[in-house]
Length: 317
View 1 (cartoon, rainbow, N blue to C red):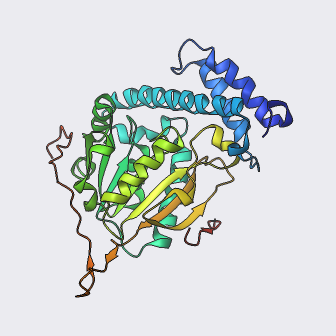
View 2: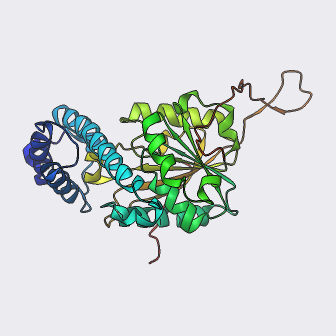
């Protein structure tokens, strides 16, 4: 086990955690922005630390810190979604968000990984955990997957209301982008309609919850569909939950990529395995075990009416 004082990065993270946890609230402010920027810069450099081997005290700090990061990130996105919503054409001003360039780079990275491992442009894409400022969907829809339809899922109706208002004035995106307010664990047969499913880094704030979501997707996604997941590596795991590729039961892991620049999240791409072939006892031939999901109608929130081998690779510049 690693104790707090044996690693300078862990020690610095613990010091920042003490300061962050004493903040009265995590809404954007000078102090909040300064502390979280310092935390990100501390965790960003490549670091061989394995957070799973930290001592219980540091594990507890990490778990709480991830929740604090998630809360602060949500409040930051909500603040800027409100600001963007005040413009006549919000999508023309996305670059006012302080981390917009990171989303540009992350979306390009994910698009390149997707095209490297699939053969056709997806018709329907699901993004789970889209939030009040669905930048990944917006960047992919406007720059890379310009004919695809995006279904954004979030459990927070307020976040979806804010997000939907951002595309309301755009005639193209208002037709291609839909927002669903629901827990993804309540979505069943609708998942089979998506060619690609993106899972946001903060859906499932710990490994157990994230694996539960992945198992649900494995049960209901269409065989051959693509799953794109965000994880974290090294000291960056103090910011986001880590998902081990070996936990992706029901999927074939195609590739894992760990960025070393300012893009924080690792990216895992996997393919949903075919349904199992079952040999009947009477020996009359094999058959595919049928899916027994009972499809419940899911109403979209749209006010517009309208390890198998893991390849770790470096993207070309």
